[in-house]
Image 1 (cartoon, one colour):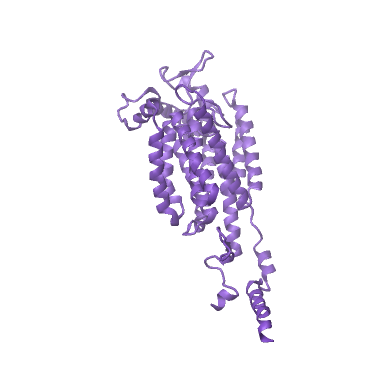
Image 2 (tube, rainbow, N blue to C red):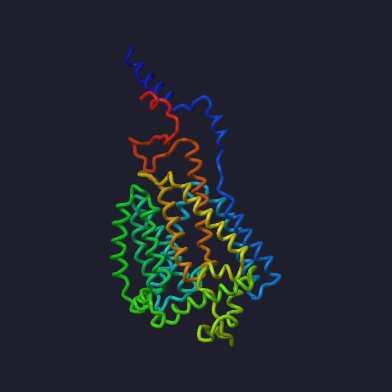
Length: 412
């Protein structure tokens, strides 16, 4: 009976449409899965190796601690790049970062602090400026996870934001405030093109929330010095940054191969006037660098700054390579790319005012970016994209731009 044969005919047509082409195995062999880029690990390992070499002439007794730390950072980067291979793994790590920042914000909210929030809450975070910069990256991730998630996860991302913002306010860190502003501006450029309006609306609402939370007189007093151009009217900390940067430059000229980890602090009395120095509590008055680039120049010399520049160029290239996921329907990869890129902008801004060289969050971001770059490349190489929000009527694979159509798509 013809009517009984119709389902079988339909099943045969569907099987023909979805069946892989005869040379599919050959295509997979021609395009094997690409792993994360080894360059972040290689450059961090090179930096650690240079620090061990500097041990021969380092002036600070803390130099060996720095060399050990960066050796650990290189190993950490290698481990994370091996682990963060799938979209699920990368998103899970991003959520853990946001939850960690929420816990820090909750700790600040439930504790009784007088003055600035000066506590050690995690690795590479040992003062209010570093804490503020770390929390700004948490805001970036929470914001883009809110935009890229659905259901309960979206509301969790929204719910943690006030506590993270309040933590930034309690640090009273000017560098974190400037980083937050620059991150907001960068999100419009780095964020998914199809979400520009949503990013703008969320940014405006975020500003309203931030201003309602910022009731601290200390915060506004310190923030007000950012608009002061008269050096005589600046507070002591802000005005001294220019003097310290000039001294760090002279240290670099006198020691082009660097002084070793924290060497700029060790010999700062030789380059800075006594009124700029601060008491260490052990009978010495010193002052450390307040700019990441200047700290690297003074401590690690020309080799250190070249390795750092190479790492920065790799970050820019990786973000550029991820542009195809930044279209009208970016999916999770596009939102995570925006979170990582915005966080790098925030830390680069904050690093102009503080030394972020030991901030572990930089290692996390490098590993996340390497994982996203490899994941995006493998998806594009396969020629297929999985819908980020599948539904019963829309659970199919769609060809990427430039991929050859197959099956029913070719006939249509």
